[in-house]
Length: 420
Ligand code: ATP
Ligand code: MG
Image (cartoon, rainbow, N blue to C red; front, side):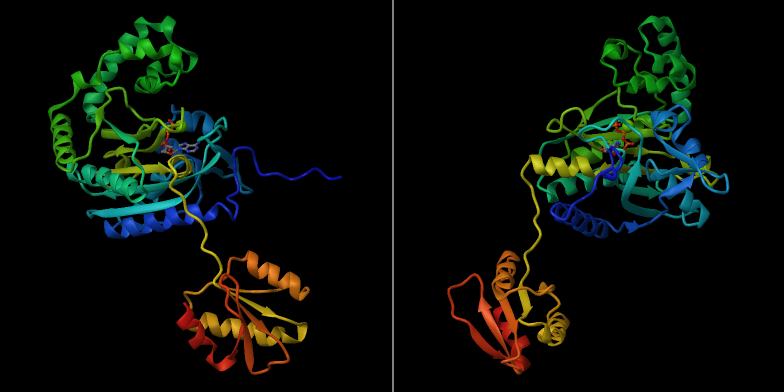
């Protein structure tokens, strides 16, 4: 027998039983984005490898070991996008829509990272990304965080907490970097292989290490906060005032540096304790230098991304669920000679009453099996079409103890409307 074909490890199907949860979440997101006047942008899933190397940073987990990179038939180096911000900035520059203007954008879709699959960590996963361009002040940082907090409220999620930090300006990071490198050099023997490699190329990322063996070393490292420039401190103070005013609680985590190179000033994560090790469901921050770094005219920017699988499993854990609505009307042609008439009747009902969910029985079968399927569909009503009644339709009540009725086909819309 041929080998059973399976989906790629770490890449999952969303089955029909599961898609209502996704749809309910996506519908909430669309409403939320509209109410905050953010517009959707859709970019290709494949981009040139260069885009991610130049934005995310050469010495990051993503670029060093997680990207799905390949050569296409022309020999071009392409990559399945591991995240959305780089594509968003690339598109914004290419189409001149970031230049000297404010843009509030969002996107939703699959991202790809070759990580070790486990609960909450997949090789194809989905992100909702939100980005705001052209605003340097901390008010937009606050808006983004307040918006994410509203989403948790809309979804009925309670046990998420916000961790906040500032990375300072590029300048102050440079000063801190020198101090950190000295500290790390002095403790070389405690560093793991990844960190040794990063000492000179990207020392801040050592602080982001998830290796428990390095916890103490990281905890005792000099603090970035002692090296911040005045403007970054002010920016951070303003953000805290806005969040306090909005009643949003947070904890300051000076070790929060995020895994991508392009962040500056504000960084934040929303974390839950309910999902084990993969507890960060939303992460973001400011990236004022990225637009210029990718060849555009400098524009301040900030954004966040939500890991949709993690958020959906948190909704499961906390009992927030969504189910597909059942069929309303099940329409049955009782014999093959009735099919044409039934197809047309079903169309007429859908045309006149688009809010109804109308399922036609296809594939024939005995009356008994037809009625069984009608019952299983969850429909309230079955409409039976047959030759004996060329002008009328038999109505059967599937959930109520009412006897069946004959209704003129011409009056069926009216009848369903009243029953609806
Ligand atoms: P982590 O520290 O968990 O690896 P990250 O810092 O790599 O996360 P980001 O690149 O900031 O994550 O992505 C934003 C969000 O996307 C994460 O907070 C998480 O919710 C989700 N995410 C990231 N990688 C994965 C993955 N492999 N599978 C599922 N969700 C993911
Ligand atoms: Mg990661």
